[in-house]
Amino acid sequence: MTTATIWCRSRSAGAVCTRPAGHPGLHNRVGTGRMWSNAQADAPRCSGSGRRASAAPSLPGGFPNGKAVCPVCWGFVALEGGALCDHDAYTRPADDDDAADRAAWFNAYGWSDGDAESSI
Image (cartoon, rainbow, N blue to C red):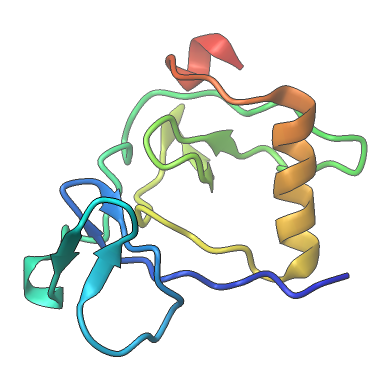
């Protein structure tokens, strides 16, 4: 298995930095010419935090273990009282197995541009 690249978590107006984590210099979104500093970056909290959601369907091994898919950042997020818990706009996989589980889930269930609760 190959090691997953860990990307920078910084965002600016929703655009995600496409440089590796820990990079020197300004953040950059490849293909857009957009660059920004840490001071200009969006807050790390995802705007999907607190949205109503329900648990995503599980893979045979149990992933995502009762978490929901955030329709804003596409992360798998714990639920509290039927709503997405506060979470960062990007949460990297914990390890290669987690990255593989995420990939398998999206290959099995796909992506949706609608509300995660009604389309998953």
